[in-house]
Length: 449
Ligand SMILES: [Ca+2]
Ligand SMILES: [Ca+2]
Ligand SMILES: [Ca+2]
Ligand SMILES: [Ca+2]
Image (cartoon, rainbow, N blue to C red; front, side):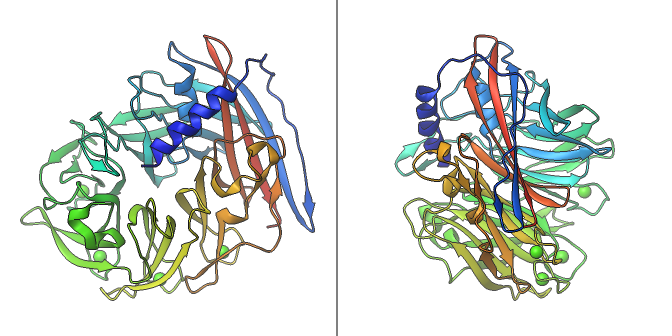
């Protein structure tokens, strides 16, 4: 749903872009000071080769707030932008790799042979291995809000990063519906397996390839589910698979709920072990992002689930369920504030160094970070940061105003940790000429949060 909105916004961006001579790579530091808190703002400008594609394919890739990520190898920091294409576009976008050199983002490499429709979610398996799930939202014909999307293939990718390069391996042998993706060892053979929004599961073979097993989940899985995560909720030896549903009138109760499955080793089918609906939520809310993690440090894993939904209260919401190692999950907190946010996912990171994980939103299209009517008036980061009180309740960060960036124009803001400080990166792609696009990256490090 959100991609239709993005399409309109980008259309506006195109109109507002003017041709100009590109700058060379440079930095401009602004350090507004609010008491002890400082924002270190860095601007990097790069020319990115188009590889024969329309410059909008670069723009789609750099504005993606879901798949894009920052990682480190041997103390060197990289920014990897996943390919991201819009509805109705015949041409794929492709991944682009940047490297931090002397505090600036320098363009390193493009992967034009790796066409992507749009990475909507990813999981970090270890420091050098990730899985990316594309999200065509239209690989099958589905209708919501009276709009039917046209079919387009989606893929899932195993992403291995090495020094100054990335190796992409397609996991799936046939296209399917990959809005969300997760990994876990379902059949207890020591090898992680891949699950996404599909009835089918890809099990890993000893040689590292994946084999498709069909209809492992019951029929409704993959048709109404939008988010999935594998983790250990209950105190037994096998993983739990949590699936949160999206909008579908036929499955009304699931809009504000989720189902938990376990894999039966003998039948090799998923068996439903629990279903829950959140009494704290109302309206049509579909899950779009889930993590299973211990949020209150009591030794038991809990559920953090992001939801979105048009035309309802709490259109961008995160719910917290507290676990105790049994099926008695307690709906504990809801972070939501109508359309104040444009939350396209979140990261769990301890931003105030008190050992409790906090929630930081990935924000697409500026959302609540926009000051005034235009991005150029600057940003305010407070709405993206939610501090854990230690019990699993979250409060909007309000110790100081995190405002700055006058003159910036951002397509996204993605959080990461740099030097132990919460940081964000965002950017803007503009038309340069038929061979190159101009990509500006803004990087904001918050000192003494
Ligand atoms: Ca396995
Ligand atoms: Ca378990
Ligand atoms: Ca817990
Ligand atoms: Ca914390």
